[in-house]
Each structure stands twice: as structure tokens, then as C-alpha cells.
Image 1 (cartoon, rainbow, N blue to C red):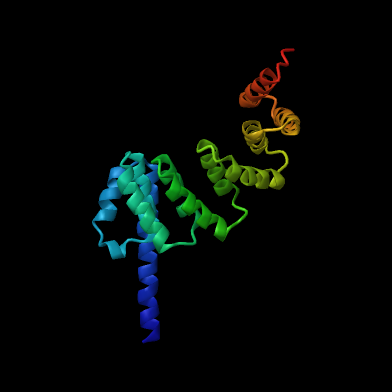
Image 2: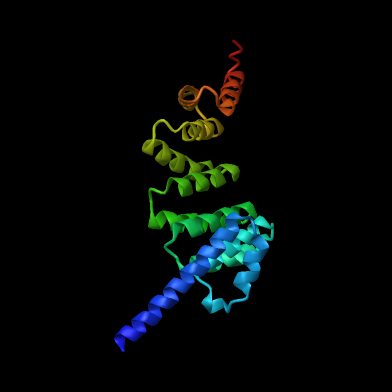
Length: 206
């Protein structure tokens, strides 16, 4: 009897994975509507977290962001420890302008994996865009400590310092951070623009 139930379980397991493989294949063939129709033919309690994920991606590709949001939220509920699912969900929320919800979900990712540099960088950018420099600063400091050759983190640290400098010492420190950002990537134009603004503010025209 145990063998019988094990065989039933194995058959069911393999069937689910075969169905998911078919959906993944359809996704990479850009057949988004076919994925939607395939998944929606099932009863919701028979849809796996991975199928909800690709359903959400398909809705997103078709720019139906409200339905994408619902599908991706369900897949994060079914597999709450899958950081890839939650990262995709967080990015969709941010894209929809739901930055408070996005931050909550990025923080869940970081609770699961404090070294997730993608989530750190994304949440740091949200803080920058919202001009919440006091929240952005420790994020980019953390990223730069993890990789001192990360020119983007160096740039954002310099930008934060430029935006928040209040004293002559702050200004001098900002100049050093800008110089470091330029040094790390001589081809990154925003660093030069920031340097130009810094020197104009200080009336250093040469």
C-alpha cells in the first residue's frame, strides 16, 4: 500500500513539473497569452507557485500590471522564502509606483538574505528617488563595503553627500567621494556631471 501511494505521489510530482516546463518553454517563446489561458484553465488550488510566477510575468509582458501584481503576490505567499519571486514582485510594485509596498517586500528579502546585493541596490534607489537620503546612505555604504570597486555605489554615496552637505568639512568630504566615483569608472557620465556641479557650487571654474 505504501508503494502504491508513493507511486501516486511520484506521478503527480512529475506531472506538475512537466506542466511547469511546458509553461517555461512557452514563456521563452513569447507566448504569453497561451500561458495565461493554460494556467487559468486549472483550479486555483492546483496551480503551483512557479506557474503563478510565470502567469504574473506573462501579464506583466502584456502590460496588465494589476493582474500581474495579484499573480506574483500569490506566488510569494505560496513560497515565501523564494527571493527570486519576491524580488520580481518588489520590482513590479516599484514600477507601479507602489514604493511603500515595494520597500516592505525588499526588507523581507533582506531578512532572509542580508547579503542580497540586488535587493539592497533596488531599495537604495527607491530611497534616492524619494530623497530619503538618511535611509539611502547606509544602504550604499553597505554595498560599497562589500565591493570597493562598485562605481555605482560610490557614485550614489557621493550624490548623497552632495545633497546633504551642510558644513565646510562635509563639502570637503563630498569632493573626495566624487573623485573616487570618477576614478572607479572614467566613462560614467553622471559622475562627471556631479563633479561639475560640485565645482560650480564652490566657484571653482578651472
